[in-house]
Length: 173
Figure 1 (spheres, one colour):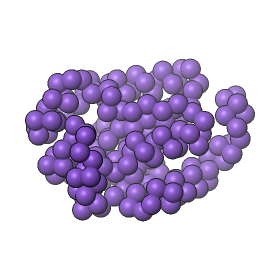
Figure 2 (tube, helix red, strand yellow):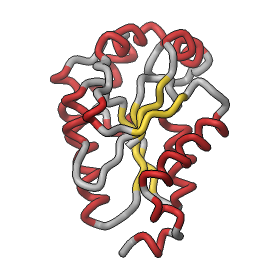
Figure 3 (spheres, helix red, strand yellow):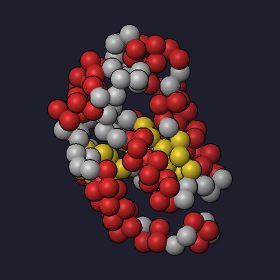
Figure 4 (cartoon, one colour):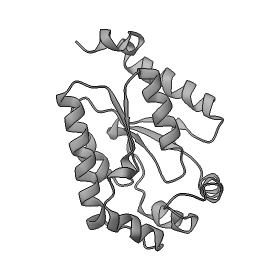
């Protein structure tokens, strides 16, 4: 699960990583109920209770991928430790895309056709809980060209999971 603050590049990196794995890709933002999207468009920060249905649907997607033995890359902001814990099911690896706030601000300004306006960035930064070493999350520097980010991610993933060097059909046993 590719995690990070809005504008960190979760979708771009997630799609590329799913392609690298020859796996499925699911965009976590598509799991938001309509009321959440309306709230964000209206520049109202989401609260924990707003995120519960969304996190539950992402958790269901993860369980489904595990049950079907399908390598799947998905995205989720997972700003709080409790959210990350909820989606850290068996066989799930979280990948944090770390990007400085000023870069996130610029990226959101350059992304005009998204429901998350740049004015909402502060609410995400305030909601974010630092990642603890015990969470065992792969962290990559998202403040570089996408090819460099992907090289770092692939190197760290292959180091942790050497079996990823095999083709997908060799990994599904």
